Length: 91
Image (cartoon, rainbow, N blue to C red; front, side, top):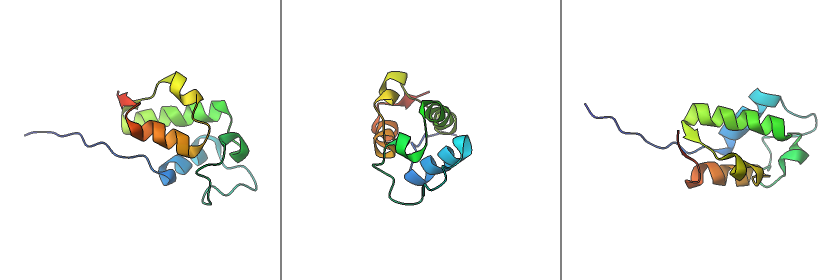
């Protein structure tokens, strides 16, 4: 019996679900809207909330994300690019 690992891409829907689970949703912010290029700070998420989400991504998807790379991911688009690009590695 052989096992193969298939990389599952993290989607915007996955990311917004994790943001809600980790830190809730700021009043007046619609995470279901066009938030791909909106800075996390404008969405109501600080660095602590993002660290929680990064930890959840690492657990759920089995990938390691370098701390220094996360600092530059200021929008959902940038974070998804980082997570799905290969800068993140299998844990």
